[in-house]
Image (cartoon, rainbow, N blue to C red; front, side, top):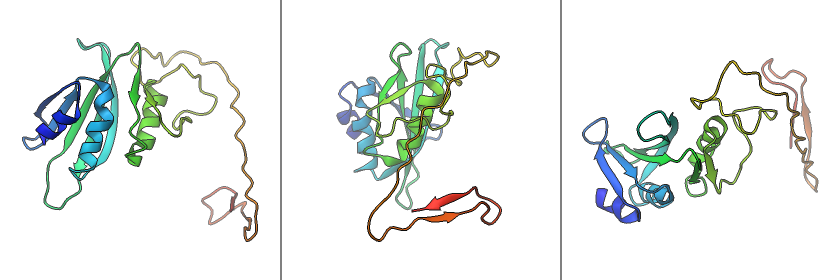
Length: 189
């Protein structure tokens, strides 16, 4: 597997044992190699993205953000996890999005952008996921530089367009104000 991953990474990789001897940690030399290496893991290697974790390691000697993509085996009897590790320059906090080829990355990448300001370039849905609509655009609560005691400015939330479905055979069924005592009013379309 190590040779196949090296072949996909034009900038080179550093492969080391993971937390267990059978696991691998693959450190990419270039963040641009991420989509190709991730595609190798989910395609021919039959692995699935389990999670994505970003950390602020700017105070370490690397001086960068770190993003770890954990892939798990999908085949029965296989017990090897692979972690792709990329260092992200704080001056240009961007990584190529893998959501179009690995849909499971969708919410993980959006959380990473909301909480760390690491932008997944080419993401199909760039709306905020974790922070509310009135959250300041340049304020990232999981960065070490974030001051939790600071008072954030009040911003008006942008208008969210309400889409009305129309056409023959479509019905709108109002639900609420109380349905089983657990949900707010809504509409089925």
